[in-house]
Amino acid sequence: MPEAETIERAREDAREGKSPSTQAGEFVREEMHHIREGKHGARSTKQAIAIGLSKARRAGVKMRPPKKRAASERTRRQAAREMRKAASGGRRKVSRKRATSVRRALKREGHSAASRSALSRHARSVARRRPASARSAAARKAARTRARRSR
Image (cartoon, rainbow, N blue to C red):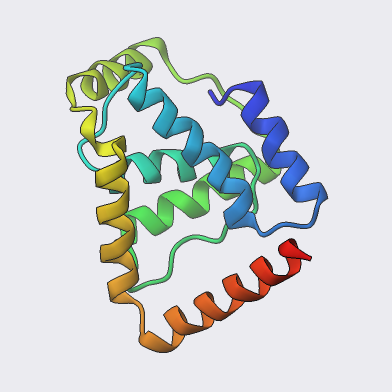
C-alpha cells in the first residue's frame, strides 16, 4: 500500500496537468526509498521500477499498459487488469498469506538495485535503446525547460 504522502504528491501532479508517467514517478521514487531504507529488496532496478508502476496503476494513475515490444504478454495483461480494477474502485484486501510470501521473497533480494550507480546504469541502457532522434528531441525539450526556468 503506497503511503498517503506519495498518493497526495501524485494527485498534485495530476492537478497541475502533468503527464501520467510523472505522476507514476512518485510511486517509483517511494519504492526506491523503501529499498534503500531496507524495507525490502529487488532483484534488479527494472523490477524496482515495475513495482512502483504497478502501485501507481492500482492507485488510479491512468498509465497505459506497455507497448507490445516493450513487455511480455503477461505484463501487459496484468497492467490492463490493474487499470480496470482501479477505475472500477474494486479494492479487495490481499490475503495475508500472499502478502507475507511476497514480502518474504523481496526481503531476500539485494538492496543495490536502488543505488545511484544502478539507476544511472539502467537509465543509460534504456536511453541507448531509443533512437537518436528521440534522445535529441528530449535534450532540446530539456534545454527549453531550463531556459524558461532561468528567466
